[in-house]
Image (cartoon, rainbow, N blue to C red; front, side, top):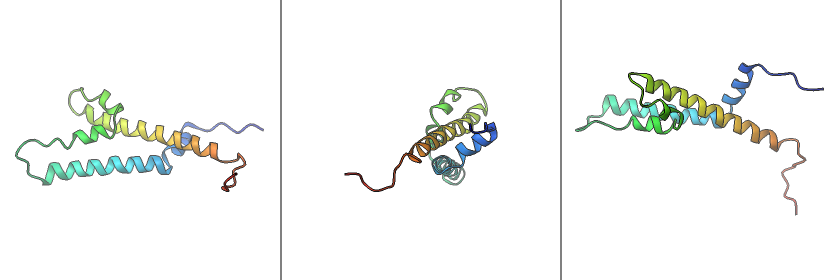
Length: 110
């Protein structure tokens, strides 16, 4: 019997709620917390380039929108984080599904 089709919401949730995607989003959040602390609490003689790291951790998607005016580049960072997390989560789920049900017992085969 074929499996029932999944809704888009279920598929997105399964791609985002796994260790790899959540770990990536935690790294992105930690970088932006660091950027906020650097911007608000650290005195610099020159302008800080800490915000560049927010674009680096969400590249290449965020870099596509980096040249837009106003706050749009920061929407690109959010979109980049989501796109990369979905891609990592989908890859994780694909690799995890390939490892199950193929007769592997964990023992080495000589």
